[in-house]
Structure formats: C-alpha cells, structure tokens
Length: 144
Image: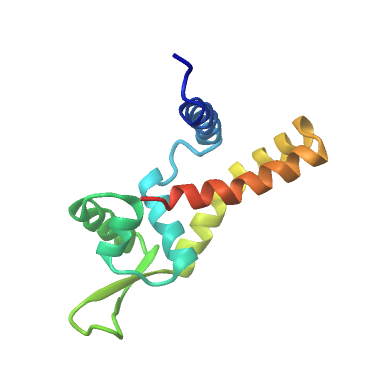
C-alpha cells in the first residue's frame, strides 16, 4: 500500500514547524512571560479589544484558564479591562502601552535571530518562498 502523500506532507510540515518553534523558544528570555501570555497579548495587539471568551477560542484554551492569565496580565499593567460598547454587561480586554512594549521586546530577540538565520542560510528565492509559506501557514492555523 502506497503512503498517503497528504499525510506524508503533513508529517514533514509538522516536524519542521516544531523544530523551528523549539529553536525560537531557545531565543526567549528564561524569565520572560509565558507563551500563553505572549499569545494573548499578540491576539490583542493584532485584533484589538476582545472578550475573554473570544481570546480563549482564539487560542483554543479553556475560558477559566484564560481568565486567570488575563487577571495576571491586568495586575502587571499589560492589559486593560474596558466596557464592551456592543454589550454593556460584558467587559473586553485591550493591550496597554506597557503590554505593547513587552510584546515587542519578547518578539524582537526571536525576530532578530530568525532574520539572521534567513540571511545566512537561505537564498533570496528561498526567503521569498518562506515568506509565501508563512502566509499559507497562518491560514492553516485558523482552520477548524
């Protein structure tokens, strides 16, 4: 029986993404924010104010886990709790200026390492292909 080419492709993509993810995690400050906190700040920076439930869904986390993390981010001054203009009974969370600075600093180290690796290891055509693949991988990340 011939192996499923889609399954083989999926394995190759998963392995490559996991290896790159681990390599990028090594670039993070050991005393930095958790990956969950960085992810939630990233959603708020990209999408604007969001309710706790929407943040949980965006990261495919349990709402009670997100509530605890949001409380910690709020206590650290990295997010702000705001009234929801669409539903006065609900609150939304917004990234604060301190949160933006913290998020940018966390990403900067990893982005600088990756930029150096892209320059050193890839041809211009390969860098273009990686950029194109990144957009496609973003779409896959949003798939159900």
